[in-house]
Length: 134
Image (cartoon, rainbow, N blue to C red; front, side, top):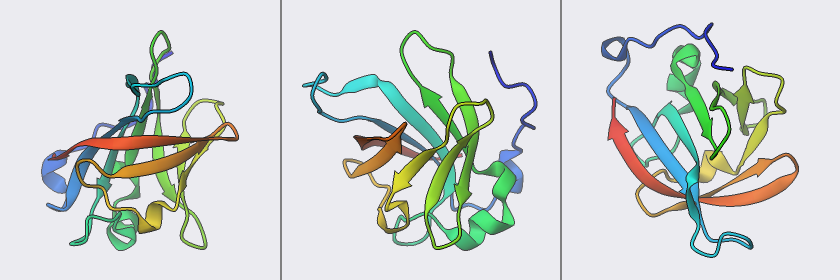
């Protein structure tokens, strides 16, 4: 069921550092070629080193969104949440358990880089396939 209570983002009201980042499942058992259909779209501010900017996140929390994409499933929408100690969580608006960005604070979100997400207790590696201005 689509999430209808998220307010639209007014892109022009956000700092220029905000990006739309798409990450897709990299090679793993069961997906020897990866899978473009198993993906996340993340809206977040990036600093000059292409890392998530926690200070800008703090100022624009509501705009920092995530969408979980899976074949034959409804998209899951939610927010990118910074937790105490520096970790990042992908918090879904549904009752689905949160996913955890593994070392997201240290990851660079540039084309071709790899990032990991712990989803339902299983670690998966994703490749950054696009980073674009809003």
